[in-house]
Amino acid sequence: MTSVRKLLKVLEGEAVTPPPIWLMRQAGRYLPEYRATRSQANGFLDLCYTPDLAVEVTMQPIRRFGLDASILFSDILVIPDALERNVRFVEGEGPRMDPISAEEIANLPKPEIARKLGPVFETVRRLRGDLPEETALLGFCGAPWTVATYMIAGRGTPEQAPARLFAMNHPDEFLKLLDAISELSAEYLVQQLDAGADALQIFDSWAGVLSETDFDRFCVRPMKRIVDLVRAARPGARIIGFAKGAGALLEDYRERTGVDCVGLDWTVPRSLARRIQQGGAVQGNLDPLLMVAGGRALDEGIDRVMSDLSEGPFIFNLGHGITPQADPENVTRLVERVRGWRRA
Ligand code: 1CP
Image (cartoon, rainbow, N blue to C red; front, side, top):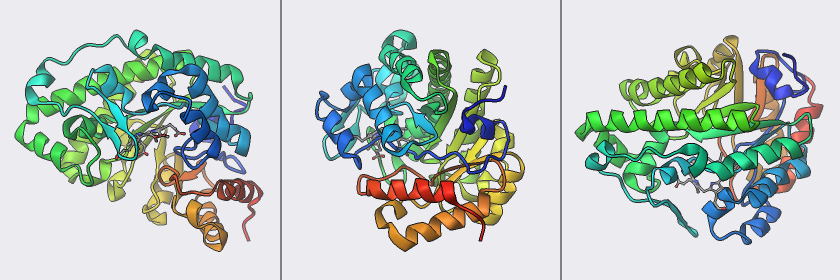
């Protein structure tokens, strides 16, 4: 099926000029209109679970910048929330939850996703109605490894020592936890597709702290399991896999996980990026700090990414989420430059 949505053409392996563009974390604190809507919610999770507000913040960057894709406003930590881990967001500190023990993993609840996360699916349904015809709508979830790091530590930690140590001390329970998250996440993604999401992204933000063996066991296999489960339920589902910091281990990530598109962070060398692109679509990989710096540094960064990757199937994005310090004017500048770009 050919689509008016450029991002979907790229996910089918087509090179589109100019490439579709969207930004990870495009709805967020760098936008004054986000901060205004956020202040109407009773905390961050309430924002995620109130369709009126979640639709509004999802639409904000689309209205302001006319991006080619919109990403559902939610968070990867709604899965631990569905698993009753007492998830909360502490102002100025980030997410917190009750650290899970090996004993608790044996007795994880089996939440009914349709009911627990019902408001998220309602948000997706409304968004597909409100978005412009040509704007793709992405659903998402966190990859099992990344979600597990928060469930074990109870918070974000710099190198995920608590989760890595837990996997060493309780290998069976740890794999069981990854399995439980995989199954729940696959169900969650299928329901996002049914509610109207055009494609999906799975965020493995902490893939970069693992050895090769652990990357295989904790990132690649669970990612493949989710991809297989989603495609068994909804054949042809389009999926972007983003394993941040995985470096050389990204070489055969597409083949080993089955994702349609490989997300690249800004540290991935161009030679590797181009080899990965030989196999299909890639997404990335501008340094997000350039959205703070702006000016000539930003222009040069954009030209570098375009010159490296714009000839093949490519989705322009940052190499990770946009930060609260970014200047919205730099996003306007970025979108204009990408859309007007010609090889010198
Ligand atoms: O107070 C606020 O407004 C909270 C800031 C915020 C926002 C805007 C959080 C807390 N989450 C989100 C939204 C969000 N998170 C989206 C949808 C919005 C969009 O992209 O436009 C998405 C896709 C995420 C995904 C997410 N949440 C990831 C994976 C991507 C990434 O950036 O690595 C991760 C690791 C999280 C956990 C999380 N949620 C929020 C924070 C501050 C964090 C990171 C905490 C940490 O590691 O310390």
